[in-house]
Image (cartoon, rainbow, N blue to C red; front, side, top):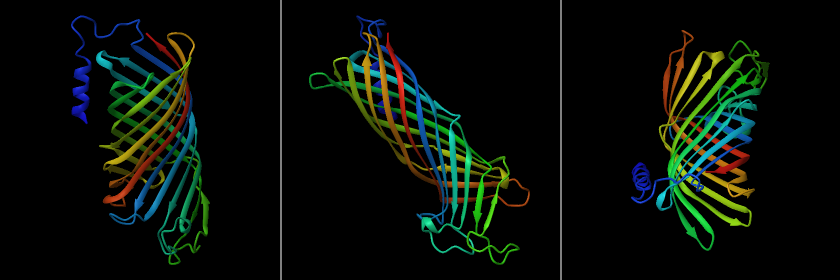
Length: 320
């Protein structure tokens, strides 16, 4: 993949001896910027054993927040293209649930048979960043359609913090508190309880199609790839514990649809919808305890993480 990108870039920047690489004023550089709304769901798992699909813990992080978006597209000689795009979000409403399946009252791994649950309505999306850098080439499709085949790099960085919340636990009958199944109920202090951070580099490739209809241009895109070198950090403030996950490769897919209306030769309004999914990546975890009592330890292939995002945005596009 990296070799393809480097070769593509070299060919694109070769240019011609009788004309400049880029001719400003001919619409070869296109900027866009706008705003929208972003929905997110992050999932983190702890599995019963290496290779097992049974989760002993599942944390579900969700948020809806405003989003800023921007991009730059450059048309290069011989139909080559270069593009960068970024989405930035934060300050949205969030929610987190934490489910566990273990202990004296454990019966089975059915999702409805959890033994412990905590709910955190006061969950903040601290930040979200999603960016990509792609090299591609345009190909004509029929009378007026164009398909751009492209590949490159993508990076996603997101963090949530859950504050306060309530719990329903199942304690052991042999302990000082006897509450049986889901009999221990209470609340957490109104302070940060858990902070969850995902960092997801990826290699991607795909295609974007567009075709004009009068002043309108309709388009759609589809991309796929895999995360590589990804990791997460999960800080449990009340337990003096930080969990570091080192993730293996996992597939990602992205689909989008777009409609733009041209006000003038160089100005358009763009409406865009996009769905991105990073499938659950499994990996190794290091549990770092700093309470002075509990020893730190590692787990192999027993942790997993995934991410789903959906966005709607409106942008102004201008060419130069």
